[in-house]
Length: 148
Image (cartoon, rainbow, N blue to C red; front, side, top):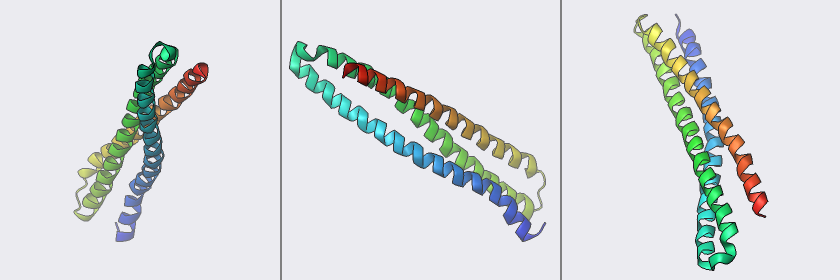
């Protein structure tokens, strides 16, 4: 196999790394927004506690939203961890491709395929966590609108 062939073979996992990078960027932005919303609602809950019984209904709504946002944040964290682990698997795949071709170690082929498949499964897990999180986002908005 020529050097050009090796480089081309190593680019397939590289494209997956790039795709996962874009997914990570979007998910990190959403994660930051949810964490910021949790901080704001937590502060609002403290203010409601000082107001007494007048704000009891609103405080209950805030507590429900905080619980839902906590679950949502965990799912976003899981998606981020899945995407990050998939990037690591794709990097390992690229390294194994290079090693197997340069060192002439065909025994690494199975390991290379396995590391690529692990990366793909992790991407799928991240997508599923992200989809669950998106569904939860709508439910939280519905709770907020009922309170308003």
